[in-house]
Length: 227
Image (tube, rainbow, N blue to C red; front, side, top):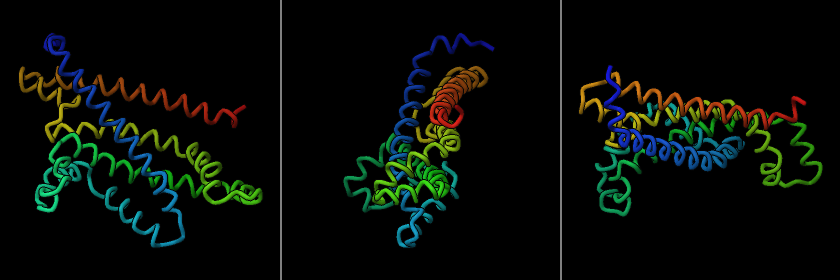
């Protein structure tokens, strides 16, 4: 194997790394912000609030992410209503379509993770908050969500890593992420091992870095329980 071709083209991989980090960080941030209120509503006993969210979660967890990307990137152009509106300015861009698909997919999984954590909040904590006169929104903000985040962190850590790996699908709609960079090198030099082994190394470094950071956060959040 000849890795000199990698050393001669660092700009391609650096661009891929930059795009991967942007796609993952933006998608996860927006998905988490959307998932928090959806998870709270998902625990509601009102079926008109919880049922639509349940259907959304079922649909996006039941369909492969690659299919979702294709439906958004190629499918939106089939609707004249979209093409003749301001929305086409966004949906014709692969970057927007990738982030849009990642957000919807990650939000579905994150909502379900948080929903389970919220429902497992110790009943005594909620009763104590009610006893001191906290309103529902105050209970959610001060008691339920902080407690739920601690329980959800291990599962959400997996979602972050899965999202990093799933971001490689962005290359199928012409985006140059890490996987797209490997495809470019392979198409130029016909060296699949060098191209994709380098990409694999980048993904492994990112994965272990994220896992280490989340483990440190988990230790910090659980410090009061292990002293």
